[in-house]
Image (tube, rainbow, N blue to C red; front, side, top):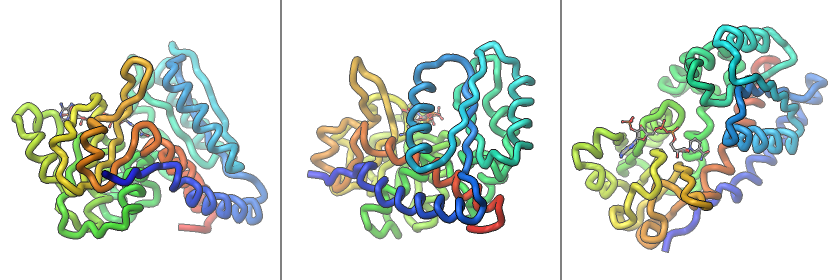
Length: 288
Ligand code: NDP
């Protein structure tokens, strides 16, 4: 039976480090770090994310400034708002809650965030730094998945790591994070499934990361005995949340597995706060 990898167990350690960093920041700068959050429209899911972010930020002593805009704001007006925050020296980091309404190009908005205020690590320069192994900020969900893998204490060198899902915030950044630990990395996507090869790749994984967004798409019986299973997926099925991996059977085969909810999710928001604090310190010429 697999050991559960629970995000909450790691957050206490991470929080202690962040609290010490914030204390140092306050002593040296005289203010607290500020995170500006842009929310467009009234999507309930985004409301859940922003309240989680506010709770985490304020719990650490970070100021969380939420800017809410009506769903009919134009793309140009939103870009102007981002520019305004870019120029506001009291703001250390900016996050745009995605997705924006359909008439707005998410990527166009996110890429206008000043590179040193990009706390999600999705600016092209920050992604380039990640590829070069010189990251200053790491996309939060990928960072959380990697923290959990590291928490197993297993040496990844020469192992097979398989990622399912190639999004820019999870799958793709994880390629580079994993490669630093020297496993052989394979990335699967819908084309792998269409070719009927997903089960075979999953079955070869010593480390499996599922970031798909389809409930229990990965069958427990596909999991290699002793694998580390990181389930990033969050899917609402009726009244419950489930991951992308069929949990019950997978838990019997894996050596470590993340539950959903309670695995990657609780850590992600603290990765955002870590990015903010690192950005704030770099802006003031210390840290990094
Ligand atoms: P995206 O929708 O951006 O990407 C999903 C990926 O899954 C795509 O690469 C897609 O392939 C692949 N995929 C879809 N269907 C299949 C299939 N049948 N077989 C193999 N691959 C498939 O999702 P995100 O990366 O944004 O999110 C993934 C999941 O993680 C979601 O459930 C989301 O809610 C959750 N999430 C959780 C977070 C947390 O904090 N725990 C934070 C962010 C996301 P293709 O590219 O070919 O279309």
